[in-house]
Length: 294
Ligand SMILES: [Zn+2]
Image (cartoon, rainbow, N blue to C red):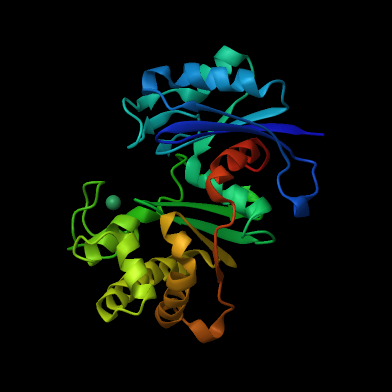
């Protein structure tokens, strides 16, 4: 048995798991243990992670998934949802404290690994995971290895510019994909009506809500087409809050996707699939980081 520990640092809680890497893939990750603690101010983050690692016990590996920009050396440059998180050396400090190697990566990369190994992306050679939440996260698993880039900042697809004169993004620039295709974007397209309400009304066939959702689906599809044009994936897994409404949103996205894709008749089209792993994906994926990173 290979006991792999993973901890997902969220905006409100840190969730830790131990999984058996040798368990049969078909039966899922085989979660052996689960622990959680509230996410503290960044100045106490390493303390809480050390505590959680202790609770997870003796394991063969330890990976941590953290939101925001994480360097290849495990330094959290900035994380919008964790107070005080500027240049926190999570990886180096925790490694020193625990006297063991610790892998720290972005939570989007971790979720991509979880879906690739156990969820909607099983069997994919070139998988993109796109999380349409409050913002947009992303991660790519290519030939079984999560892609990190030179700085560790690969997969920041939410900030690909789709309209240079568009509304201001949280990153300070204009017209990022996230402005239109995140959960927040759906609210903006609906003139402030909450996304859940738009989706609910569209389900009942209310024409104005269907129009807003179609406009939203088109923006989602434009980003997915761009990803497909530069990366040629076989599977794109859609996660995040919007994936809860996959039954109504994904068919719309699929239609616009085919319409916006470059050279659609010359290629196999990537499958668009709704994420399956739920909120434990980040912790499971964190446990996979030491084993499927370059
Ligand atoms: Zn942006």
